[in-house]
Image (cartoon, rainbow, N blue to C red; front, side, top):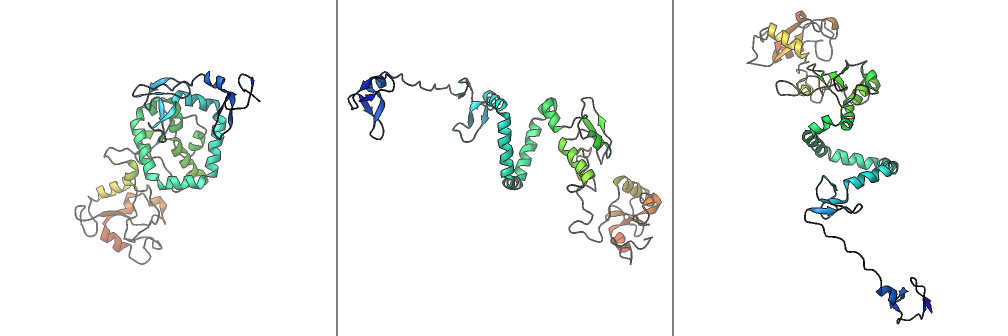
Length: 321
């Protein structure tokens, strides 16, 4: 004898009263209960171009505005709509953040290798996104606080020791470009990198602020002679010019009529350099003195620094001319 799991009737344990299940055993419920079972509801078929959310059961257009993209799905979109995913994240925020933090700590080397391998591709995607959504990013206050640095940020007082800081009408921090002097709003990453270079000597270079805009079409970073330059870079040659500041260079060249003062070659004939008569290392007070500078061509500049004690590496001689 066997008791049915649904109607609780005591029936003979035979195939006359019970169906066979998978594996050859008799089912727990009797045949009459199985025959009276309510059939399962069939999934509704959405209209072409639409999709049902698996949580809220609402039919929505199958676009990236309502659903997140997911390559594993057949149609390329997630089965839950964005609204349901957002509500789920709010209810389980602490647990999700902890899982993500544990994953980053556990797979730190794997993440580094991935970003190093796909650095150019990720930079192109980020640049394309910011160009496409520039208006939205500037008008959105939440994104603005993350991408552009607010004046009342915790690092503003520290940055004021090294840079001239200003506050614009939107309450954002403004700094001056290191090359053209134009004011602009830096990003959070730019502020952090500049502070690390100034205070902790962390990272490569001084990480100065550049607006990357200029009237001639080239960026300020590309126009600045000191950007991304080492003191003695790879391939450094003795005859290479030790470039002075752009303003000082233009004043000296204009004074000498863009002509070498030794061989009298002009700018159309050769490359012109600005040379310090008294070494800038020995007398730093005269490093930007016009009377201490002279215009020379590349060959004459090389000849001057070929004198004993007047090379680029040893300035034992006070005057070289």
